[in-house]
Image (cartoon, rainbow over all chains, first blue to last red; front, side, top):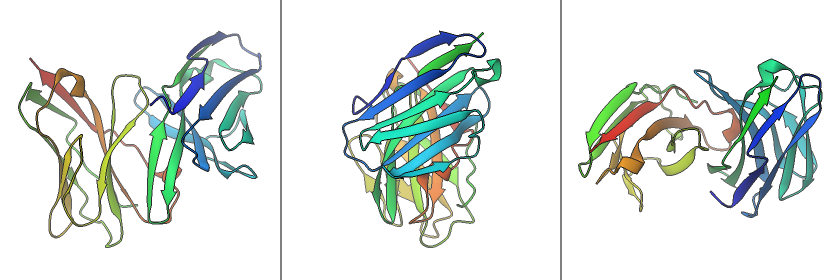
Length: 114
Length: 112
């Protein structure tokens, strides 16, 4: 979905390096999410943000941090990358309408930590 | 959120209807049924959702049984590009979508 973009799309880094994955959206949604996907483990929530001043940890936040620079931007940082953070990372926004909430995902960033 | 059960895999001939079932026997009265799909290594894509009534959009139809314990996603004329993993998710209103579980889903393979 071109309304949610992620940069870079692919990244190779070395153990111990700090890297940032960026997410931008033009959908005007307040809610944004970061997930990682590993083979056989499905999507796991890292962090989420319900608005610019609201940041919350997901189920696997250790080793990660986030920044919500604006409504449209939500960045994920790996403070000191390690090989088991090699994964596919997805950003998502959601159209929260109270009872209903539909998520829209970016194309993903494939990260390899050597 | 109620637990869902889907078959691990299905095949469908190109041009035919693909009917993907989902069991959610413990669904509560106010929980919505959502369907997403993930084409190989791409971000999941929203397809459709419903509460009680059958729903249709440009992508698919969603049939929910009267007792709401199961549903079926219908792709009326499947194409090769519909090959993907399809996820059925049940979620209560006013809850955090980020905490919904994308389980194993159903891998649909559309064959020529």
